[in-house]
Image (tube, rainbow, N blue to C red):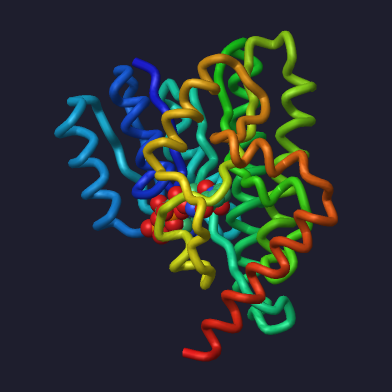
Length: 254
Ligand SMILES: NC(=O)c1ccc[n+]([C@@H]2O[C@H](COP(=O)([O-])OP(=O)(O)OC[C@H]3O[C@@H](n4cnc5c(N)ncnc54)[C@H](OP(=O)(O)O)[C@@H]3O)[C@@H](O)[C@H]2O)c1
């Protein structure tokens, strides 16, 4: 039986994707740090869908984490890798601690790069497999007051688009999921404020799942997110700058 490996599969978008793959009969391997959240996610999925679900507690921002994870699962028949684990920080770039953003880059980019390369090699040899790299609509533009995060996601988008070209006609599908704002704990953790237009993680995952199955390369869930993408770059930068600055001012007033 083939399995789907989902990093950051214990909550949010990752967990909702896990449920959809489980509903279709796939075995799951969920990776995140918090053992309790992983345990709860496993129980939720298994109660609903009765599929095999393994959990791996690992900090993917640690050096060589991609190799460590790969070594643990390489003997399982994984046919889909979803590089979903990610974090971000909102604030004045000179005030966000260097260590925090270094950790972010190791998780959002380095671990994703490592896992993609390790699994892609196997998938190419087998002539099948799917890799889904989770970026953000922030990947399409610079993001004042969320600069490092948007830049880390621009790496994910461009890297994945290039791989999608390289893997054409190999039987391997490489794609990039770029959600707009999604209602998860991400905002609380990143120090940002939830925007007015926000999509549920369940809906985001449902749209993503359908488009992954259709073989799309860049997936932007929701018509508003797609529309915004085509506004002039200067307008989008100004909007992000204004809204992030507004939420930072509100935070310092409290
Ligand atoms: N929410 C949004 O508005 C939004 C928009 C666009 C893109 N995205 C992207 O979508 C992805 C999922 O976000 P989400 O909103 O679902 O976030 P979330 O609810 O905060 O979930 C993040 C997941 O990643 C795991 N994780 C975090 N740090 C990790 C680490 N060092 N090692 C291993 N696992 C780690 C978390 O578990 P542990 O903390 O237990 O490790 C959790 O399972 C991220 O890449 C994010 O950048 C989110």
